[in-house]
Length: 130
Image: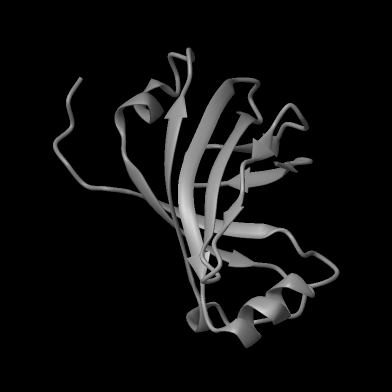
């Protein structure tokens, strides 16, 4: 289990810090090089609302690409597959729309000196239901 130590999220409708532990990534690496992700963490919006975020996903690519990523080297995201499906839960009335969406996210690893993970999260379109 990898500890998620914090970070920041930024979007059109909400921004803020990723809270420090308890937060984690239950990683599973297959012999074939497929990295399976199971992440659970808490976001705190800049206006003070808490949002629980969990996602499952995967990352894979050629061995030389994964080796470079693991060393913190810069790698073009088109060289590997990194996708996840985030889900959100919140008691906040302001952000309750998060409880009612399904998203797909693309990911990429940053390189040194900022080696963390970057994601772009896309809500899947559908009818707006109150």
